[in-house]
Amino acid sequence: MFEELFAAYEEISAAADATFAKMQQDYGAAVKCAHGCADCCHAVFGLFLVEAAYIRSHFERLPAGEQEEILRRAEQAEEEIRLVQKRLNYYTDDPVMQAYALSRQRVRCPLLNVKDECALYPHRPVTCRVYGIPVAVRGRAQVCWKAGFERGKEYPTFNLDAVYRELYRLSVLLLTEAQQPDAAEQASLLISVAKALQTPVEALVRRE
Image (cartoon, rainbow, N blue to C red):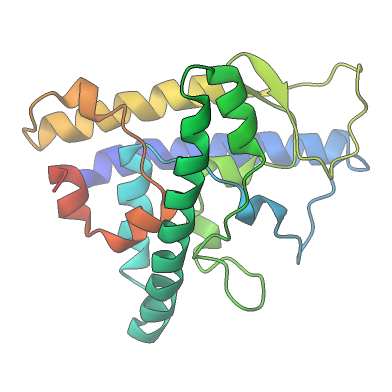
């Protein structure tokens, strides 16, 4: 069930990597990403089902001891995310303010180890892959606050909205193949990185 959809997901990841590499080549001074920088590893965002299942499948290949350490961090991250959600409930009727408030929240990713290195770096989410370059989210341009891109100047922008639509489509297909009811509705529900790591792939797909 998973191989074909995971292959399609990897094509999206490869396109994100290619865009990042091109931006780094063309605007190297503005791209501040470097080994040891973990700013993006504290951003709060959700995963579509296909990406959550992909990450969990690779997590299961890590050594048992490393998995245990990550799961301990995931439990702490989930508790912090619950607190974030409570704060966001103040802006339920204001999506713009809610999005802004979410962008200001900081939760350490459970995949980030004590050396500030990602335990699943080759398989990290698309959002992480393009964090340091200009991206379009909900039709608006965004970029890491550390980046050196000049305000008011036009730059090529990676369309995360288009990527999210494709990840949603793949998630619908994954749920449909698993014969889950209301696949279109379920595929719109986002999953935290911590919850994806805590949940076996089959349980993710079965939405248990």
